Image 1 (tube, rainbow, N blue to C red):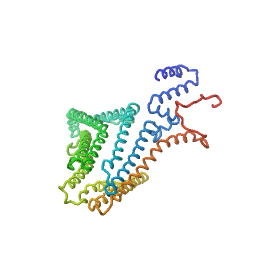
Image 2 (cartoon, rainbow, N blue to C red):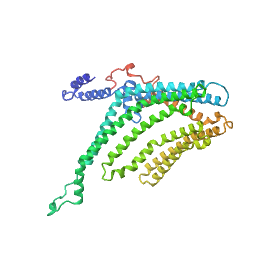
Image 3 (cartoon, one colour):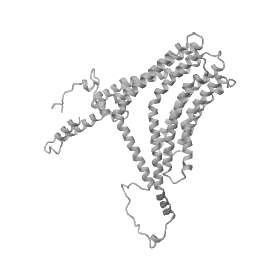
Image 4 (cartoon, one colour):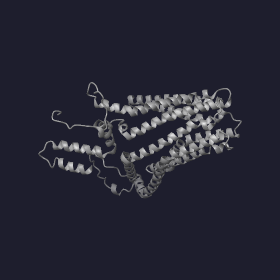
Length: 480
């Protein structure tokens, strides 16, 4: 491709053909063709949708035109719909077993759940392969761009520490800066003393920031490595937890509840390590920024560090506390506690998110600015509050019914308890199926509508044909 581009560029360059008027347009077309074909992402879009797809790729949502991205998202959508259907089948069989409608073994009851595990494993493997293709083609360029932007930001921060200010593209007119008589011998003032003290401390600040930056980048690299490996490990540990639970329920083993739940706690331990590395990277970034200010680093970083630690660990702490309370209730140490008290940690996320939405609403009311922008932000907050109300109604109605079922096993059937779960899974299945169908057929329809936008009606049997199966004729004089 490069050889052909150089040959044609030298042949049609305007400087080498000063008398030919059409050479400049030909050279521009050659340059544009090389720009498209040298970019893997734009080349894939052109091979699938042609020139109109390349033009639409620069608009909002143009990333979906990439065949790799659209196939990845459609695979995820259809797999999520299939997993939702399998979960509906699993909960239906479980409800019939708990309500004594049949006496099947739990190994049979868990068959849809294990089928869902195998499906998720296949999806993770396909996603891993497609991610490797994306990283090898177009995403590596974006990764390099983000890395260069981060390095540029670090250099600007170091310049700020040195007191160096970038040159102003529009400098102010010069003013009379001639010192007064005897001002050069008047000694140093407080500001000059502070500047001299900062100059003396610059080498130590640079060394500390370089050490912090090295450790932070190492932590971020470990986080990225673990993030790529943990989904597969989580799935294997979850399958191990399901197998140990089935063996315990069918009476094949006489284990304690804590031993049965050991794979689950292993998942939480791995997640704790991942969160700790993320927290370490965040704390080091806070310390780096604290070195840029003249305040006391300990005083200026204490509150942000505590807020970051709380935001990192709060959901993990709630899950582990709930799992430990349920295990202790089933094992006997907390047998006297009511199930409503055991599920008390489950109500804390709703309190936190409701408080966050409330304070965000109050901040928007106190803000002053463009009325249209504030109205849009208020609409977004209200939409988030409505979504929170819908989701929390499903979740906590299920929690309330589950507490009732566990407190009085004969008062209500498990099939009625699982009604919110069935509704939520049905909605998820419908939404994922519609999203997958839109990705599969809607993108081609959008490209076809854009292709024939200037016509009254689309030609019969008009469809987007890939370029490797497309027959095109060169433009003639009559077309021009």
